[in-house]
Image (cartoon, rainbow, N blue to C red; front, side, top):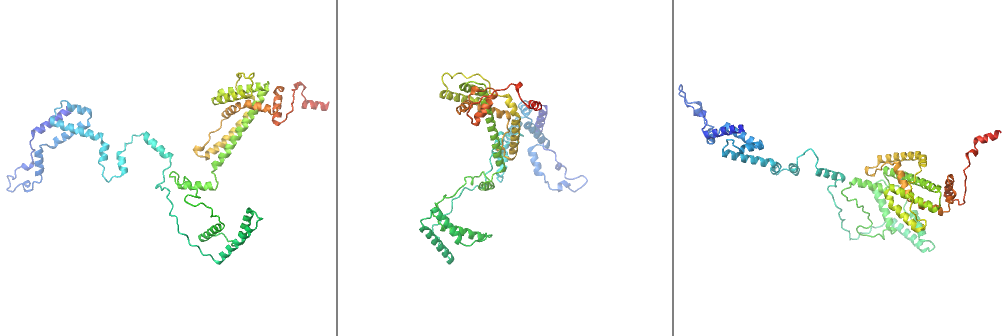
Length: 500
């Protein structure tokens, strides 16, 4: 603040003095020891206009510099400099008004620097230059608009430029074409062919198919001689014309529908601006040659292996689950009701199976179950067999490992959108349990209706043999008893009997 006051007082003193500076041109024109005029008087006064301008302004270099420093301090000093201007700083009203106008002008230029720069562009500036001048400056972070635009550009291929829409064909020629004059050899061949056709038409004992085959054989026999394959453009053109004329003579062009768009297979992706021409042609060649990429063939083999493993896993568990339920004994209705209980327990772990279990249970009750057997399902846990899973785990882990190796090999060849996730043994087992539990009641009832053995006649290992006999198609009833281990006869007993 003291600085502004000192500068203001200095400006006022300089402006009030208004005394022209002393110039060296006002010195005496003659020296006391010489009669000649001074050199300054002999030279023309080149700076007279400049001196008059300085006299009219009444300001020296010092005052102008101080005024510029004051204006810069006010315009660039911020809010503190503007507050000092409003307070008592010793400035005159004229100087304050000039400074305020300068501050307002500078503030306007700073706030609208981009618009002013865009407006001051020359007319010769191009669109890219104008876009850069009007764009927001880079802040170091990518905006949401720029990120979205970049993702859209990466997601879709650029359009082919220049894009040409399909054009209509040329005008259809209406004037008849002049008939080509035939040589004597051609007329003779045509006459011989017509004679053969007439002979075939007169023979009523030959069927239409046999007549066509015989006609084709005669045409090949009496037609032009066998020529080597043409190797020039003229030879290919002659061969094509000959084939076309032979087809026209046989009448293969008589029933062809004519008109625009007839007998033409137009690919809708041919004119798509999003598909490159090279890519379209390569895809069409692969389709015509019935060739598939290597990763497609790998995909078929991998899917067949996974499907085979899942079907085998479900089939083995279905047979084992039926045997486990039969081993618990009871009548057929008790076994079916127990299977429904297992299905309900399984549905508690899989919410998607609840509606299926309820629907299947209600349908089965209304169709087959009597009122005496329509009881509440037993509260049983999920159907599992740790001993069976411990026996089969080594095989399952080995099979899952090989399938994952096949999937890994496929993922290295396939594009990202077609890659497959790896298999998990526990996830596959849970899916198997959920799929089999819903069908267990129907499976038990179906096996009983096919003439299987009485479920109440077996226990323990007897049920396993009963399940095997029922699956193999035998209908006779068998009864197996377990012998006491003390009465077992083995190699040791056989060796003892041989030497005694």
